[in-house]
View (cartoon, rainbow, N blue to C red):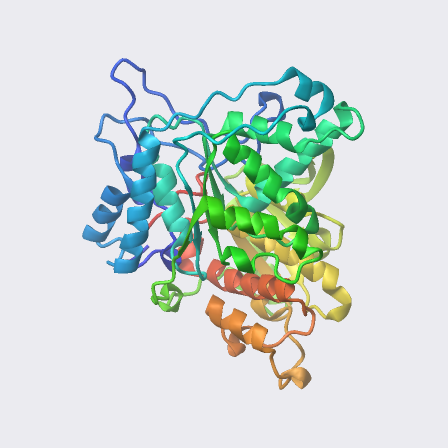
Length: 483
């Protein structure tokens, strides 16, 4: 990928990643950071997947967020940005605190196992617990790059750590809640035991794309975060929104206000917006989207599929993968490449967990025959947006055939094109750096959260159609892309 900028500046750090490695003590043997796909029998949570591979440990000086950032500016990987430098200094300060931090032991309590979390008081937070970071800003302000920078330079004493998309984290939490309720007396409170288990697994937790759109998440989030903090867990989060704007106009939002108070009290809330919009840098498009639906485009996409699967194991029909104890059928796939029609992918009642698992197991996905959607297909549109978010999170290479340009499938017909956009819709489009000409107007989505999800999906589809995405997507290490 050429200079001067990586993907919206929030690119991952593959070309420099080897120098992120921290040294082990001299007597310790070389070892790899485990990052194989989790297997149920190992007991490793699916959300603990910050990277596909880590390089072998090297005998090099300890790398810090600030030293790595300065190196990347010096070699031209990043452009000097005084505001961003200030943010990196905050990362550096937290890094320095963590070098001397030792999480208190998290022990089981017998009464808690018998009667639930109400049988024990919540412990006091460790006196030396570093304050967490909450980084918020528009798309393109470098949130993911900064998260990579911090996570990959964590000091060597932090051996238990996880970097996870918040959506995937909450899916795992609800799985744990289901298992707890199945094995405990009715009325037993699962929040503290789950927080205890999570605190045992990670001293530092990095949340990417922190957002709250679901009442179930809103109702438990404050207690879950509070318990984990009390058990000595340090959080760093990135989000598109200031804490006070989370779950805005959501159902029973008053129940979520204590979680907002917790974020404002326990975190250093920091705005990433420096006034520089790296999305506006021109990027060449790649030939991964084909429209309209014609025999010629069908033949073209089949050629691409055949070429990519030729060296990826045999193509088999109806392979089945396991998601939450049930089987999900993949209509056509090789070892790392899957192919669906739109009806097969979105015409069934699949969930975010299904789409996340598909994009974890297959680094390239083909979706054929995507129609233009209307008000009567709102459920299909929501599922497709959820699928796009999963592809984006797992840096999946996507090939599509569609009736209209893929980022216009939610748009109104030409006869409705003159419809006036709401102020909220215009502000969201401006926030995401997309224009009327790119996505048009939509009547499918009306609520603020829906409009934001729709516009963000369009922005991501545009980005996933660029050559730089095509060059770096689909690799085994989905958090280590070429700069």
